[in-house]
Amino acid sequence: MKRISARAKYLVIIMVVFLFCSAVFAKDYITGANQWVTYPTNQNIYYEGELTVAGDIYSTDGVRLLSSTNQGLVYADDATVRLATLHNIGDKNDAITNSILTTKRDMLIGYSAINGLFEAKSKKNTINLTINAQLSSLAYDALGYQDGAIAIMNYKTGEILTMVSKPSFDPNNPPSEEASDDDGLFINRVLNGLYVPGSIMKLVTSYAALETIDDIESQTFDCQGGITIGDQWIECNGVHGHQSFEQALANSCNVAFGLIANQLGNDTLSTYVQKSGLTSSTNIDGAKTSASRFNLSGASKADLAWAGIGQYTTLVNPMQFLEYVAAIANDGTLPTPHYIKDDSFLSSLTQMTKTDSEILDKRTANRLAELMRNNTIQTYGDYNFPGLEISAKTGTAEVEGKNPHAWFVGFSANEETPYAFVFIVENANYTGAATEAAKQVLNQIPNIVK
Image (tube, rainbow, N blue to C red; front, side):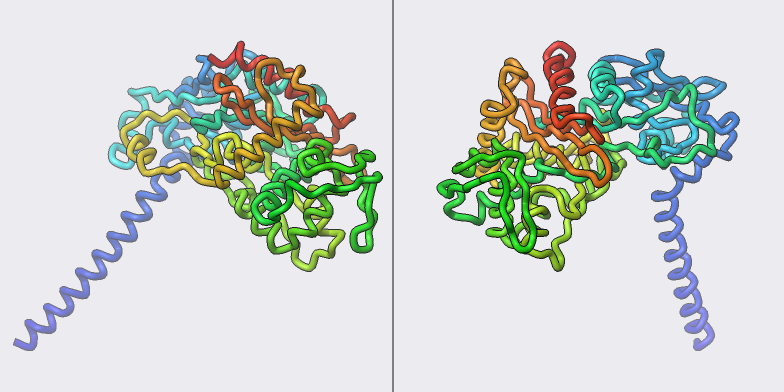
């Protein structure tokens, strides 16, 4: 009887170990099998390092952006389309890590956890994007000879219409494998770039002020070209005289916003930067954005003033800021950003469980939207964007030893064109470079996006 009892114990132990190992295997299989089968040494789907078993990728306006043949990958016919969409699609050597070829390779080749690659060679998969090829080409050309980033998103649906990153290269003529990435050639600047924000950061300082400073709308600020805060002279971009909070934002007055930042204090401003979503990474169809950086630990009064203005040590990611202005446009709520159209049953179930993110209180969002609309009417010229009802904020971000970056962020308040946007031109020759690029692109949206 004792012998049977001992054997039963050993059997139970063996079964527990077996079940544990099975659970570990199942977990590894579910989470890692797609990486195993898509490894470049798998000759069933690769030829000389290039995918031969892959689907087609199409833009929302019907342009074939990528296809596979027995000899490898074939990109779009148009050279500008290839340059403009490279960082979305990816390159043959997987140097661009946050691209469809790296994040959605299993989807592209038709891998499933149940059937593996059984149907990969007999059934060609198609991935349809929300990216508009014509709009992307226009955005790429609008940057001219300058590097930078442009992104446009439908703030009602979360669909991303374009994510253009420059510099780029033609995937049909890639740089050598030994080429360095000192200029960020392989970085998707929209998703992973980090930039000094300059005055666009005043939209976040305004968010904090509207919610925590009771009399902010009745305060006046006197600007005589600059002010001493703490131990530093905070220089302004002009002499604005006596102005209201609304006028100070339209004037992008450094004096006013340096003082407002100090009324808020380090903790409050830091809290609202977090609430804006800037310091959190976003997963967009498997591609992760870089989180913006904001740190006021040990900051002096002058440092706090510069941070509220958009300088100091602050760095922001273009996509994160696009999400912020999209939320302002959409009554404070951000729909899930995406650039892949997936109509599969599993995706439908996943979408049902997703909820929009509330970034701002509706009343605060609506007031910020009004302030941004006033910026365009009073300062940027509504006539520059006929019929779009642009609500926006410019930014000039000082970069040590180089020309400043130029920003233009905002959205169209016209319900027929519900698009939020972010334009950044690196080391621009003039402060209005991003606004000029925006004029070239945004005014064509009604003609391009149907």
